[in-house]
Image 1 (cartoon, rainbow, N blue to C red):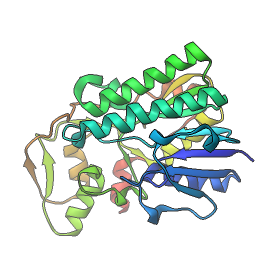
Image 2 (cartoon, rainbow, N blue to C red; image 1 turned 120 degrees about the horizontal axis):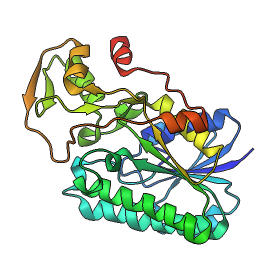
Image 3 (tube, rainbow, N blue to C red; image 1 turned 180 degrees about the vertical axis):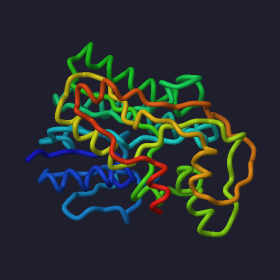
Image 4 (cartoon, rainbow, N blue to C red; image 1 turned 45 degrees about the horizontal axis):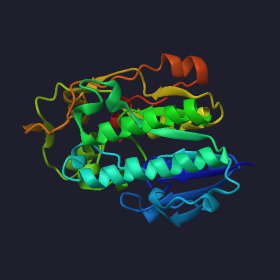
Length: 280
């Protein structure tokens, strides 16, 4: 049995990950500052701390065998007006945690952002820039100090527990679902031709666990390898829609290249977003 720390453990992805880790007989602790995480997400058998990574101390990591670092500021659009908060969470907090992992020789799985891999790249928003810097810092610590790590890049996560994200943090899948249930028109930002690789949270968890079992100082993209336009997603809901103003940072494409992840980790995505929408 391993002792595993999950930062952001009360968030959507963290909750699903903790559920799987507990099922696999691990001892799990969560740090979450509850800026986005929800106490309704707590999983029986895990230990939860109201904790920000900016307050990381070595004694709090004693006995930990592996860290999953999901607990950062994690959305594009709000990062423009909240740039200082995004900086503090992602740069300052992650530095403290990475430094502690180095000192205690604890491997870390970092949840990177796929925004740096798509057009227009890491400078397209404060969020993507800070996430890219933390990924580079993690790689630097591997080269400079022997930190053991893997970096996993997420692509447009949807599924159980993501509905507890609030307002501007919601995924388009949840927004469209809620609008349809309320009898409102679906709201498509821009012209709807922007394309995305949508990944079910179960597939994200699968990839994270595989990465945690194979620490090799590598990078892995966790997606499906398929893209759908927002117009195609709206059509799958079979409901009237209208167009609204485009949002800042809304990139044109975002497709995962999962070949390396499949070859090295044995990762295989299992859920197609169109089939998921039809099942709602």
